[in-house]
Image 1 (cartoon, rainbow, N blue to C red):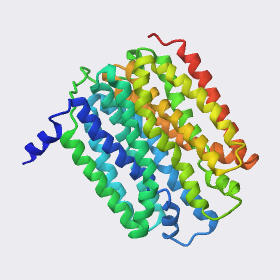
Image 2 (image 1 turned 60 degrees about the horizontal axis):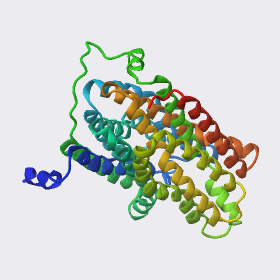
Image 3 (image 1 turned 135 degrees about the vertical axis):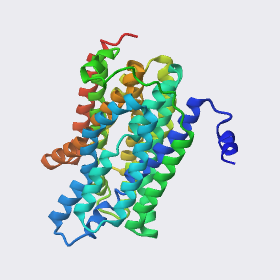
Image 4 (image 1 turned 180 degrees about the vertical axis):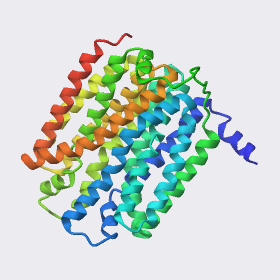
Length: 407
């Protein structure tokens, strides 16, 4: 029965297309899992004790950032192991670990238990990075840009609908049951990845794992690879710099009128919608005209689009420019991943993508901090100007690194 079902599922797809199909769904669910708790995590913390306003803000902030902090530290280790044991086993490890930890969050009795589980969640990072690495190594090079661009839409679209799904589940059931349901969904991802993802992994012929220096020595161009790490960090910092102030900025534009929460949610989600449609097409275009060129255009486009957001007078125009930013986002990260895939030998791809995930996690932490500091010193408008300057710096850095790219 199972063999017949598997045959019907796979018979019309090549192995790399089958992997892309399954891992897209897996990253979609992972995106939901990571983002769905954001609308109510602080509220959940408030149910775990009697806290003052300042204590609640502190504990919520620690709970939010704990996972990214550990992810930045743990990712290189898992990447090193992935290059020794294969990417699929790392995908299974991450999916099963996330399932158990996320479900356990529904049973915590105090905020310290929740923080510990959020820290452990960071230990079980790697589903996204290893999915990218597996697709990069199992997909023909002529399709890698399109495949990685398509894969990126899974996580983005999951992150887009996650807050809505989490809000609905929390309202229909409870905070605790929402964590348990999410754990079950991640368990389904584990089994789908186990049965349907194929990897033709060849063990590395080394008596011991490659050192960092040896990994760097195998790179086609270390300067451009490490430049892509910094580029990834700045992209994430830019995307998240406005996260702390977006709802406050919307409220200011609406003069505190009704519907601020819904409007802020729509404005926050719009880039994800644009990204969902743009990423596969821009990835395919990059395969034809050059990924580096696509990335350069995306930087320029984003830099220009951030500036008018500081001067808009209505939520409609803010949403319009946010949609355009989503198009540039649809080019940036998939382009970076494509460049890393093309510049990394198969035996070190897992390590390279795990390093990239660490820089991505750092960007996720640094971005909101930048937005908070700039807005507190100046105003909400200044955050968009600062972000445009940040993108300009990223563009100049990439152009400097681009001079070393050998096509």
